[in-house]
Amino acid sequence: MTPSMQNAKKQSSPQKPAGKPRLLTGDRTTGRLHLGHYVGSLQARVQLQNDYSEIILLADVQALTTHFQQPELIRQSIYDVALDNLAAGLDPQRVLFAQQSRIGPIAELTVFYSMLVTVNTLRHNPTIKTEAAQYGYQDMTYGFLGYPVSQAADITFCSAQAVPVGEDQLPHLELCRKLVRRFADLYGPVLTEPQPLLSACPRLKGLDGGGKMGKSLGNAVYLSDPPTLVEEKIRRAVTDPHRITAREPGDPAVCVVSQYHQIFNAEEYEEICSACRNGCIGCVACKNRLTRRINALLEPMRERRAYYEAHLDVVRELIDLGSRQACHMGEETVRRVRDAMQVAL
Ligand code: TRP
Image 1 (cartoon, rainbow, N blue to C red):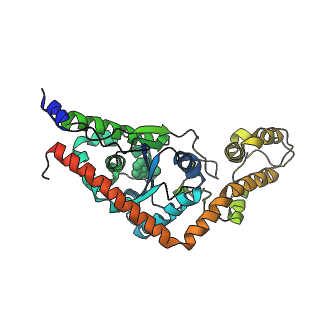
Image 2: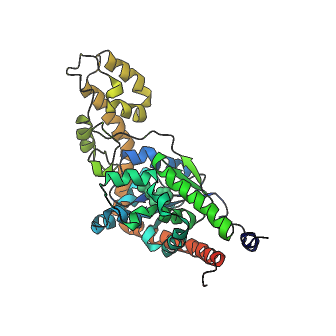
């Protein structure tokens, strides 16, 4: 029997939470969340809360990897992001909110896991490459390069079985899955290998029609925007640049407003596109219809947000309690990891 087989025998099977399968997801706390987050992730979280025991990680340590010069922003965003999730319809009775920096076991697991991931693996991670280019990093910090390792600790500390991901997070999940298997080969089956739940929705474009909707790009409709601001932003959204007057035919394929109709106003999408192509609807009228739909979607979120804004102490307690519970889960995982790696206990 090889040493790793002996270890495998010695270890019991990975922790399996009782009841519903566990799902973990997270948001960097670098600002409020927008419609792109909603269609790409929040909407699915709300639906999945019936079938999974969900943990939402307020990723304030990961936020430092890019925003270490803005600690106040990160601090404020912990509440903003929690409020956005609650406003979107996550039920605090069922979902656990945990603040990453308060979960010591995540930091500890990150150190142990960092022995099992090579620098080249991280340097070739497509999401790291894209983000490094986006932030203009010629060189990058050790923390930024290594955040996928820390994200693997986010996912495994609580033995998450499922992680909802958009396309961009898939490489990180793959790294986590490989790491779990490598750990099992070396030390025994301690960790749980998570499965991706891939988002069905395509990435939402920004109001400028250029790239994706992004917090740092100034092209987003935020879930917390008041109705008049939504109206103003949609009014300025970029449409078909070749269309000058309302009676000319337009091309929905090059218009970001049509993508929004497809997602937020699916019933009227076909009708609006053909009216546009025939020059029967102008951009102003088309945008007004979209604005009404988006404001109707956001209205219940505004109500829930107003409630929690008036009860910030409740939100604070949720995060306190959730973080403490998360710590307990993580401590158990660290104990097993230390045992398997024969690190002093
Ligand atoms: N990297 C994710 C993002 O940028 C946030 C995140 C942190 C996360 N920890 C996670 C996502 C764990 C899924 C699982 O959106």
